[in-house]
Length: 152
Image 1 (spheres, rainbow, N blue to C red):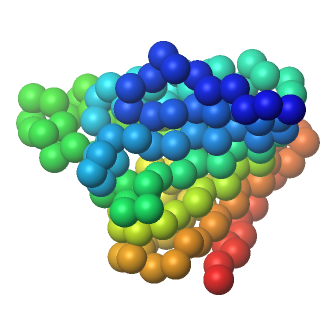
Image 2 (cartoon, rainbow, N blue to C red; image 1 turned 180 degrees about the horizontal axis):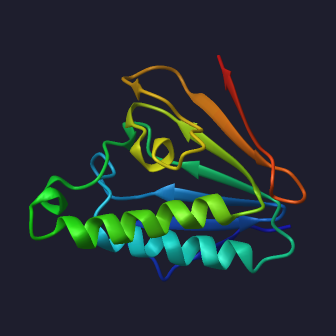
């Protein structure tokens, strides 16, 4: 089946090639997670969840960086409540999915997006290391969650 790309996003790309959805962070140069990206991530997870033909989600960044984390400007005192609300919405979307979820990590990575989920699929930092894959499995009933890392 041909790949379908969702074009309504500016900070991420979302490609569907059933049974896989590839969600790529696209905020060069280092994929800073800002408010617009958080909103797009939530919307992307909603789109993915609506697709019965999608069973796997691959989260990816660029060759240079998966992500260096949340925008420093969002950590200012007047922005923290909004930042936490939006960021927690992303994490809740990630945790709610019943799809098999992989993170393809290349380059620099502050694994904040996935590490804070309480069901870490990434831990620590990756600085220019070879591609690493992490997986979070959701059992059919969604009650059991497991972790595994696969590297090269």
